[in-house]
Amino acid sequence: MWSNFRTHYGFFFQQLFSTVTDPADPRFGGLAPDVVQELGRRLFDRYQPIEDGDGWFDQIRAVAAELNFADSARTYKQNPGLHPGSIKEAAQAIRVLLTGSTRSPALHLVAATLGEAEVRRRLDAVRTA
Image (cartoon, helix red, strand yellow):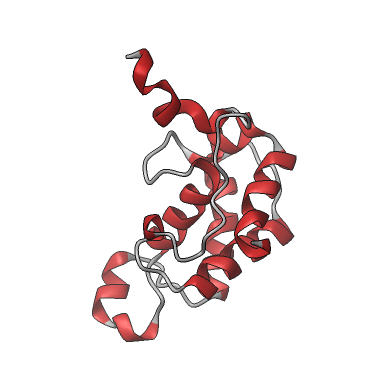
């Protein structure tokens, strides 16, 4: 429905998108604000517009590993005190930064559509707020 356009697809348009600047936003699922900021900063610093979905997502994996995120939900559940979350939570935080939502099309496709400059702007917004 046309009335759902803004909430479902508005993130593709800079004029319709409200940049996520609060690292304590509930859409981050309870991740510590400093962890959210560091995820955004580290991905900003090394971001590359890679077309291949797996290659693109490897950037998130690398940043998440540096910040001690568990490589799977199962690993996280076995020892939640050792990790800020799993790779799933890290990816979800990046999804929220890029789209403002916890649901979206594949992130590498979203990023390709937005373009490198806009991806970087959105990743940087949470750490400069």
